[in-house]
Amino acid sequence: MGDQWSLKYPDGPTFVWEVTTHDANKVVWKCVKGPGDAAGTAVNFDIGQTPDGRVHLKFAHSGWPHQEGNFAKCNALWGMMLHQLRAFAEHGKIAP
Image (cartoon, rainbow, N blue to C red):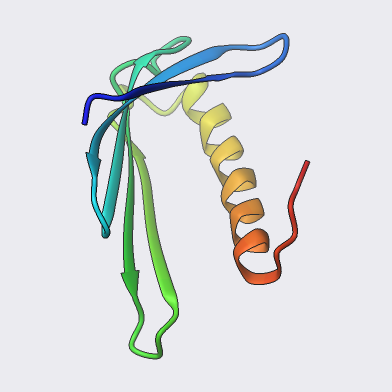
């Protein structure tokens, strides 16, 4: 734990994330650097299995002080990225 990684968008913001939890069923990242109110928020991926053997992913990006500004941008971006993740997992389709 404690490993950090960066996400930089061309001509856009840079985020630095710290891995605080990582095991077979849960991954948690804490934003240690980012624009606006992003720093201090946390992303949780809870991974489980449905009774019929499919993978169940529960996602949350929490810790926002309000639902304005960067909250709305991140909400839309996570929606897009999770849609692409699903397409890859189900069909092997890689999005640019």
